[in-house]
Length: 159
Image (tube, rainbow, N blue to C red; front, side, top):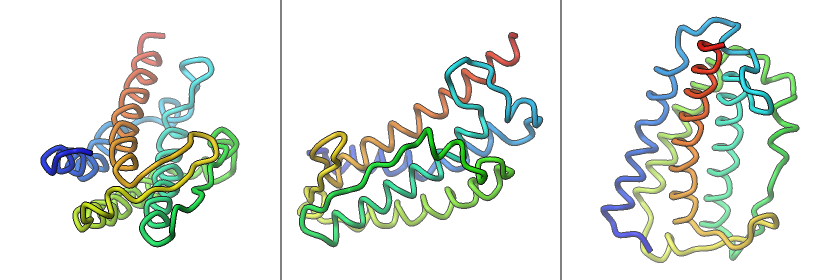
């Protein structure tokens, strides 16, 4: 289990993320947003829309673990999601969604008791999970996608 200080640091990561993401992608051209600069990786726009999808799913999984006894938390095909028409939208709906979602997520995380942090669920793809793993994993997910977007933009600017 994490210490309260470690949890607070992860929660602060969640709190900062929407602003950091928006700063990274604001003002980009359509070409920068929608070009596959790195073979086999998503575009910047796909990354942003994926973050909204992924974080909505993760938030829902957290709520299920808090309200049900060891629920199955359903996986989804993120690559198939990235091909759906809503990924053609401008970024603003996903950025707005992430801003609100992260406010809810932080408030919920800040309210958890020690017993709630330990509540668990089962992901059929990755196995046992917990509320604390949700915090840790998606804190890292924020950083991983900021890094992926930065790499994608760098590849586009060097190519």
